Image (tube, rainbow, N blue to C red; front, side, top):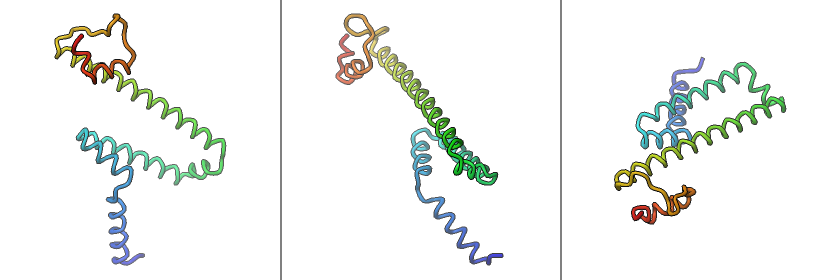
Length: 139
């Protein structure tokens, strides 16, 4: 059984390592500053991931993944598919947000429906360039 001094030193070292800013801490801080309480959901997600890895390590799944090339390949491809799905969902959200902001700006300017010269829908770079330059206010 470790002594009281050893336990207190271990607790102090653990606290220092926990508080030191790593990628998770910086991500939580940035999201909390940007979106307020949304940082709590990120904290729970990070902790859930840690619990999954602890369970995998204690049940031997981590050993299976480190020794089996096929199992590790399946995990890598599943992770890549998840990242592709998540990035496409983020891109769809950003495109919808962009359309919403552009629509709101047009309504403030008194434009009920804005279309580029020629009446066809412009690709995104043209729309961005026209909004940045202020040309879209003139149409």
